[in-house]
Amino acid sequence: MRFKYHHLNLIVQLLIFLVLGTSCSNQDEPQLDIIDTTLVKIEASVKSSPTSQWLIPTEQLSIKVSDVEMTAPQGVILQSVSLIANDGAKAEVIDGKPFSGKDLEFRVSLNNLQGRVNFSLIGNLAKKGSFDAEILIADNIERIIFSEMPEFECQGRLIVTVHSQSTTGEEYTNSFEVTSSDHFTISVPQEQLYWQPTTGTATTIEISLGSGATAWSPNTTFIPEITKTAIGNSTGDEPTAKFTIPNTAGSLEALKLQMYVITSYYGTWENVTITPYSLTGIFAIKEI
Image (cartoon, rainbow, N blue to C red):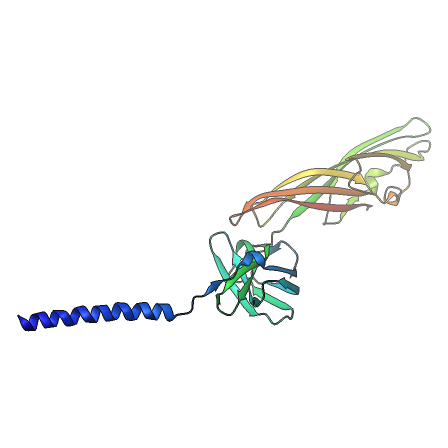
């Protein structure tokens, strides 16, 4: 019995020693402070390129950070800057650079990114005797990365009505449509525009021009909507125009008219819903 009691007593003493030793050890460890980030303010110039909202995986995004100014309690330093990408499903650190007071540039390869991505810059703060902390420098650097660049097509349509009367009373009336042959020109056939009366002369013709268009995206599911057409010298002109011009080849082209087509694209493609995207097509009205 003496052996058992003595053995139990040793175990109790050992446990007391361990508890006291641990307590003393915790008391000896330094207690770290917490950096109050509400007292820290960082201002910087942040520029990104390319500036286009839509990018493709083969491109590279550059984000430059310059003119960094920080106000903070004594001892707090900006140790480094991290670039974070958030695609809505996850956020990850893309790159990190130590800060020495000089300008920083992050070059981001887009190979592993797709969809709507928000980039943000985080400042990593440090102070002796304190836990490290983070502070937001810039946010909402948004880009959309598509597998290929969306393409948009537009075909302009001109509705032409011609009327003329010769000095002997002979009348000429003709209506026809022509469409753009490329992205820049609508050509009107002279043989349908001008005429030669069988008797008398016709020095002028009255023409009425109406505008229309068709738009589509050949490689996406975006939906086009023609919001406005105009004939004249600006998008503010009316969709129709009337003129009296000499019955001489080249008279219509001499007016230097253009047809404007404003198209809005919207919808969802590759799981990205875009806000309405507006494009203006401009077609010079020529004669052939």
